[in-house]
Amino acid sequence: MKIPLTIASLVLLACSGAEPLPHTAWDDAPRPLIIGHRGSGNVSAPENTFAAFEAAAAARTAIETDVQRTADGALVLMHDDSVDRTTGVTLGNVSSLTLAQIATLDASQVYRPDIFSPQRVPLFDEYLQRYGAESLLAPEIKPSTGPAGTEAARLIRKYALQSRVIGYSFAAEQLIAMRRVDAGIPLVLIATGTVTPATVLSLRLWGVSVGRNALTQQYVADMHAIRANVLTWTVSSLTEAERLAAWGVDGFVTDDPEYLAMLMNKRTPPGTTTVPIPSRLLGSGWLSHATTSGWTKAIVDGFATFAGPGTVSDGAYSHIQVSGIRTADSPATQKISTTIRVQNGPTSGDASRYVGLRFAWTTDNDTGLLGTTGTNGYYVALRLSGAVELVRAKDGAIEIIARGTWPALVQGQVIPLRVDLDAANVTVTRTDTGDAVSATDTTHARGGFLSVFGVGVVPAVGETSVTY
Image (cartoon, rainbow, N blue to C red):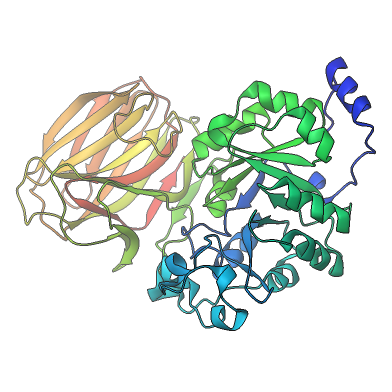
C-alpha cells in the first residue's frame, strides 16, 4: 500500500535522516493482517501451545506469542511471568525455573485439558522452525527477560526469517537490541496508548501496536503519513474489526483468528449453505456468549451448546452464533432451516424462560445482545409455557410483531424450525407440528448473523441451512 506524504511528515522523515526500511513479507501480506493472539487465545485451543499455533496456521493467519527466558537461558513461550495459571502447577516464575523443570509441565490446563492435554511449553526455536516458512510470526519479547531480544534476533537470523518475523515488544530496549543483531528484522513497539511519530522515526519502527481503545482514525492517518503500520489489540469482534479496517488499521491481534479470517468482509454465498455440527470441540466461528460464569462451548449429542455447572438463573442469557453464516441483504427472499433444543433449564412450563433463534441481525453486530442499543433484526422466542413471540429489535427497542401458542416445551426437547423471509413478510414455522407465527414487516433488510439463544434456559443448535 502506497501512503501519501504530507509536508509535515516529509519534514519529520527528512529530519530523521533514516534509510528506507527493508521490504518484508509483512509488507506484501493482504490487509488487514489477522494475527492470532497467543496462537488462539483459549478460543480454539489453549494459549501459547502447538495446538493454538496449528489453529492459526491452518487459518493462514499470523501467529503472535510471548517469549520468556528461563533461569538457564532458554527461550520458552508463555504469557505470564508465572507458570501457575496455564499449567495448573504452583511453581512460580519462568525466570526462576530451568528448562528441564518447565519441560515437565502441561500448558493445556488453562483451556479444555480434557481435549488438548498434554501440551508441553514450546521453545522459541521450535516456533521459528515449525511455522516461520509458512506463517508470519510476531513473538513478543517481554520487557523483563534480560538479553532475550538479542538471543531471539540471533535465532531469527540463524533461520533466515528476518523478512517473516517481527520484533514485537513493549520495551524499546529489546527492539534496539534486536536491531543491533540484524537491521533487517522489522520492529513494532507495543503500547497501551499511542506512540508519537517522533518515537516511530527515531527507533525506525516498521509499525506500532496500540490498544484498540486508544485508536482514532486521525491517529491511523498520522502513522500512515510517516509510512508506519498500525496494528491493534485485542480485537475478536467482527463488527469492531471491520470498523477499524475502515479507518485503515493494518492488522488485528485477535483471540479468534479463524473467526475473523472466515467472515471478515465476507458474506455467505448465494445458494444453499449447510453448517453441520462438528463431532468434538466447536471450531472457531462458533462465537458464543454466556452471562453465567462457568459455561463453556460444547458438543452434546450432535448439538452445539454450553456445558457448565448446571444451574441456570432466571435472567441468565447465552447465545451461540451459527458458524460461517452471514447472509447478504439481497435478495430479500431467504429460507433458514435449523433445529434447536432446550439443553438445560426447569423441567417445563415456566413462562419467564425461553429459547429462541436470532436472525437477520442487520447491523452486523456479531456480539450485540438482544435489545442492545444499535442492534437491529428479528428473533423468535419460544417460552417453556408454550407462548411464542416474533420480535423486532430496532436500535435497541424491542417490539413484539406477532404472537402464538405452541405446545409447551420441556428440558431436552428438540424443536425443528423454518424461517421464511421475503421483502415484506417474516414467518417462523415449527415444522413437526405445523404451528407458525407470521408478520408483515419491511423495517429491516434481510441479511446478517444467525444465532440460537436462551434466557433462563441453556440453548443448543443442530445442523442449519440457509438458502437465498
